[in-house]
Image 1 (cartoon, rainbow, N blue to C red):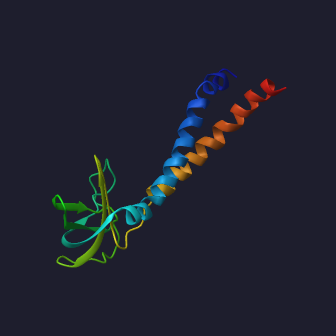
Image 2: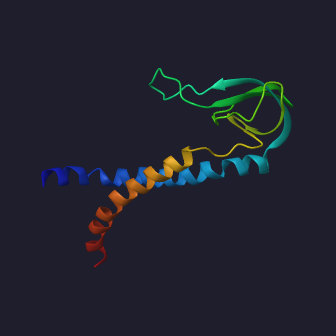
Amino acid sequence: MEFLNTITQYLPLLALVGTYLLILSFDRAQLPERVKKRGIKAEGTVIEIRQNPGPLFSKTEGEGEAPVVEFNTSSGSYRHHSTNYVTPCPYQVGQKVSVWYYFYKSKREVYLENEDAGSLPRTFLIWGIAFCVISYPFIIRNLLPLVN
């Protein structure tokens, strides 16, 4: 019983984090379309194919390859390191590709023609749902006496 009392004080924070993850998931899923809609289309050149560095805290390399694309903007040349690692890589060094970019203040968003949002929106969605399913029933249960 003491454990339940201890954990219930953190449930509003868990609900807040879960809700934020759901909003972030939706935002990240819409990002490619938003950049294509607001951004500027340019032609870039694949200058390198990079191997997936693998998990963040592991020394082993993962599978897949992603392009590094160089393109020109109104303020100069820019290099985009894609994180969309796939096997086999559909790009080759020297290949011309369409790039959409949206630069506003410190925000730098770039998408290649065939890229998608990746797995990050799905990961945020799963964790957001899990946090909300755990926390909201307890919050609702605590708020019901206030309604009566």
